[in-house]
Image (cartoon, rainbow, N blue to C red):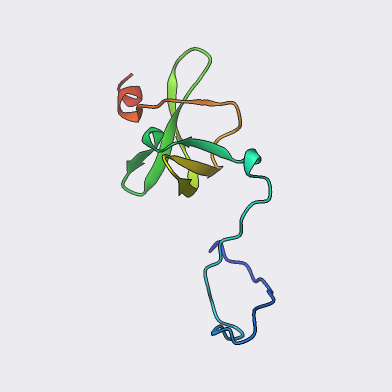
Length: 98
């Protein structure tokens, strides 16, 4: 529920970390080509909702909530909420008006 997991890691000698301490850890993915990346401009932020408009085969746009990962340049990785090959609207404001 808290997106927390216990991890055991070998630390360098003299590290300031202590046993039982809570820290935030970023673990890189091995295969970066497996990530879904979208342009930052496609992201819609409304209060606590972060989403993108996904365009279906008929050209209709549907708002989909997503969970984002780190940004690199003008793109951001999508951790959940999208499948590979789905088309997202690059202008979420215009897509929401349809």
